[in-house]
Length: 121
Image (cartoon, rainbow, N blue to C red; front, top):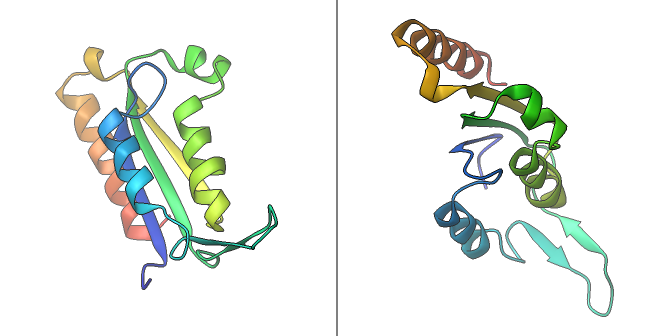
């Protein structure tokens, strides 16, 4: 309840986040803490309003293909999970192609994420 900024970091596996992460979200993002359903209605109260988020995802897919596919894991987390609960703004950072990276690339990515954390966004 005290967090003002949420950071989610995950690898992209076959266009989505890993099953273990899906299970975590299914067990944690429950009515009552993250959102509240109205009886006999499709309306909900978004209980995480006033919070922002950053989704950092690593991938091996070329970014152009990832964009053409619609960035499925990012969009699901942004709109269907975090956005549904009222989190806004939600920004994303893609890191990859991981399997082709060298030490210099990895150091640059770590520095980029460190700078994001320092400015909380």
